[in-house]
Image 1 (cartoon, helix red, strand yellow):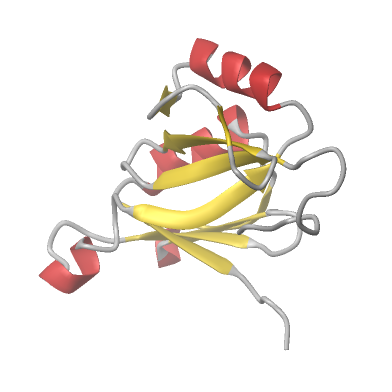
Image 2 (cartoon, rainbow, N blue to C red; image 1 turned 30 degrees about the horizontal axis):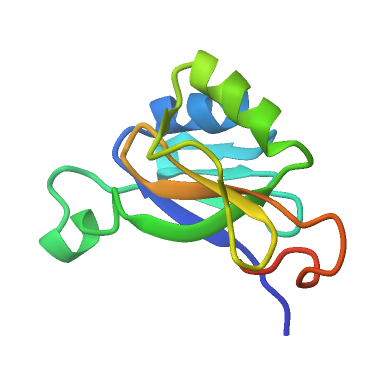
Amino acid sequence: MRLGAVRLFVTDLGRATAFYEERLGLPVRVREERSGFVVLDGGAAPIVLETVPDAAPAEDRELVGRFTGISFEVDDLGATHERLVAEGVAFASAPERQDWGGRLATFADPDGNRLQLVEMPRRGGPPAGLPA
């Protein structure tokens, strides 16, 4: 078994696609805006942005604007954080050192989906990619 894709739910597919492609640098692999989705190259797994229309049932609308548990690994969290702040990306706080030795910073996309940047410890920490 392996991870096949990560799904993120948004209200404005064009705005979300621009954010992930232009701000975060994730290339678009498939653009199916008529069908309500765009697939981005997320590295280990594709990221699928899916539109949730305003008229969708409440349980579908609740998928937008929440903590996702998704972490993007970066080599230099300080520099990446500074660049994204300068580009208008909203962060909950400055990068913080974690007990396990890495550093995290939580940010939001235009729909309020909260994601994280993670810088792994240089030595002796958990295997690459953990915690997710």
